Image (tube, rainbow, N blue to C red; front, side, top):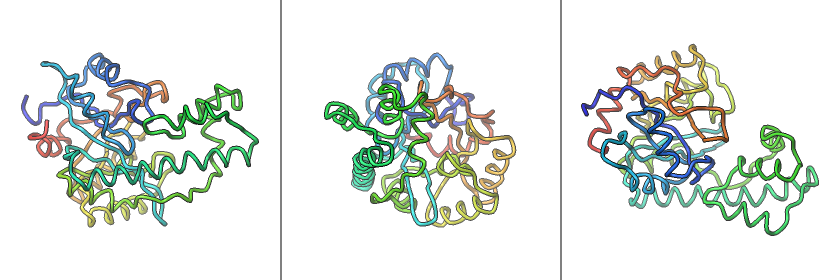
Length: 285
């Protein structure tokens, strides 16, 4: 397959290795059914699922690129940084994944106390063990447990109970995530840029400042095609990619049944705009 011939990519999706509902087997089945010709698994703060997917690939399957999505925060905001095509055995990426996972586990532990003190929600030792025993637990897992116990009526309500939670856990600065990906031979890309960490919305001035700042730190690409972007937001991101000479990527942010987003739902990705990214990953597929 020629480098620029991918017509239906999806470079942002999650599995049971983080907060998705698809196993590697079901994810690959769904990728095939969706007609994708290039896909990347980008679980939160872990690349463990990528090896599992790669072991299942058969001749004729869509092209696959390993990835990760780091959850980052500093005094100026929250950010998600995608990494593609890195060497998962490099110390830089292994240490960064371990740090991010440790922070995630601490946050889960602290949220038990928050829910008890704020709402009176309690969990049995078995329920706590169930959540903490997950590969990379997060809010979706808590929301599902709250729904199961009858503390909330919908998963959305399960997310909303954390709206006042104040994070005190160690954080991964976005520049550190970018550096780790680069030092591991990968391509760092800012996820859902103008939507911040995916749950907010920045002004044009704010996202431009972020992109300029992260470009100076080594950022190589922007997720310009994204399932939740409006046409205007997509155009803003494409203009920034051109202005700062950054690669363009496309992703759905598929989470299985945890989100109403489908594989390949990237907002009308133009394959011509992704050719630079395709060229950059050609020797890593």
